[in-house]
Image (cartoon, rainbow, N blue to C red; front, side, top):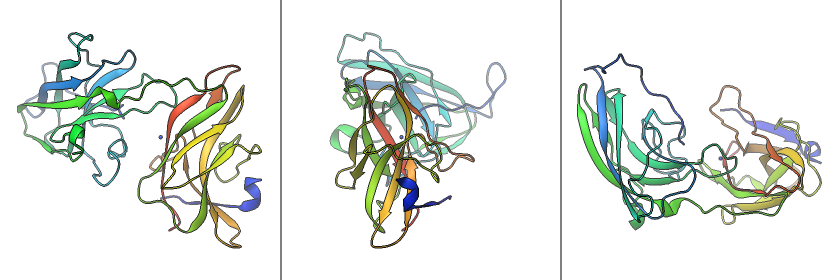
Length: 282
C-alpha cells in the first residue's frame, strides 16, 4: 500500500475483464456456466447488460466495489427478447471457465464508456437485492462440468441520466475500509495537477465530505480540464494533509494515476462519479 503525505502549503470510482484461452471446441479441463437472468423494470436505452463471474468478493463492502477488480469471466452484452416488457428473461453462457469456487455471479450494467457514470450491480446469484439481501452464494465448477444457474436482477438500480448545469461535477466518496478519524476534515479538491503529492487548488473548487454526507457537487466552470482528489486536513497544528484517493485512482495498480475530467464550453456537467478511497493514516 502506498501512502501520500504533503505539506498544507502545497494545497493553496465493473465490468471489463478477460477469459481463459481455449482451443476450438473447448476443453474437457474447463467448465461452462449458463442459465437465465430475470430482469425486472425498464430495459435501458443505453449501455450493456452483462453477467460476470468473480474470484474475489468482499461482503463487508458496498456491492459495487466488493470485487475490488475486474471479473475473471464475463459475457458480452445481453439483450432482452422484448425490451418493451417489464420482465425480461435473458439467457447467458460463459464457456471455458477455469474449475474452482467463485464467490459471486453478478448481473450488472455497463455504461458504454461514458465518463463519470456509475455501473451498478443489478443482481447476485443467491441474493435478493429487492429484499435487502446482498450476500451472494458461491459458484463451484468442476472440470468438464456444464452448470446451469438462474437468478434475478432489478433494472431500477440503474440511475437515470441527469442533466447537470455546465461546469458542475457531482458524485459520492466511498472508503473501501473505514472513514478516517485521524483528520478533522475530508475535502474533495478539483485541481489542475495529476500528481497527488503536488496538487494545485483552483480557488474555491473544493467541498467537505463525511461519512454522514459523502455526496458532493463542485462548480468547476467550462471549458476546463482537471482532476478530483480526496484529502484529509489534520487536527491542530499538524502540518500535513493526507491523500486518500481520487477519481480513477487505483491503489492496486503498479502506477496509479488520476483520471482527467474534461468539460467543454456549454457542455452538461458530469454526475454519478464514484471516488473509491483508502484510509491510509488511521
